[in-house]
Length: 68
Image (cartoon, rainbow, N blue to C red; front, top):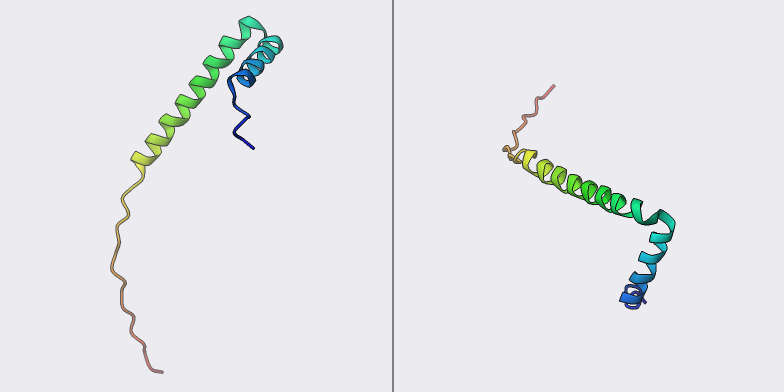
């Protein structure tokens, strides 16, 4: 079902429709903004993974029961 969705002719039609909607001047700006957004997201994901502290496993403490 999904196999035929992303054929080159379909992508060309999508590009032409986007060109008509946004115009030739606005389309590069939209692409640039999208690229910056993706790059920012990727950088923040890398930083979040680097800032994540290592998980330190502490041994379980034993409890003692007291009689009343």
